[in-house]
Image (cartoon, rainbow, N blue to C red; front, side, top):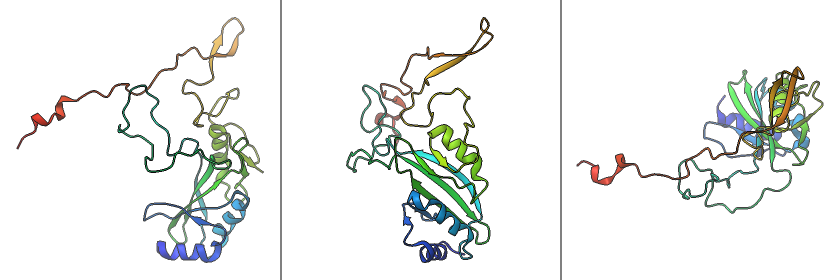
Length: 225
């Protein structure tokens, strides 16, 4: 089954519920509303013309600095290496409901095709979306990971607990506003004979060079004929 045939089948079955989003030419990517997240997923799994039987991955995304974040240095130029700013786009803050998204990567074994599906959580302050565990059991630990790292809540999840961080961990480390040095540090107190949490003692520091130095290896005067 070709990509074109898969796209035609998806839009024939779910055209009013999906929106095509930018992707590479050999990829298929769609977006749906959070309210239709589970319904759309069931159709993608069960419809015989689609048959996306496997959920390969699920992740959260924080779009709060998407397209506008700069390296936070004092003297870097505006044309540095690996900057994430889109100079041609208007610098507007995202609207409520456009910060946290959940993205799944699906595989159709029957048709040998892959699909990326995204939905934004409606509320940035308390991002919630329905769990896909009843559609694909493999979503279980992926959703726990997204909850742990991004603070996204999955309605109907059977056991939504932290997965990668400690039980007493404060905050969600993959959020763009989470400090790189963390909020607390952990150590074993021999007097209390237990693990204790304390304010972070590490000083915040810049992790990229403040000055972009001239590299003599690329001086035009050294170029050969």
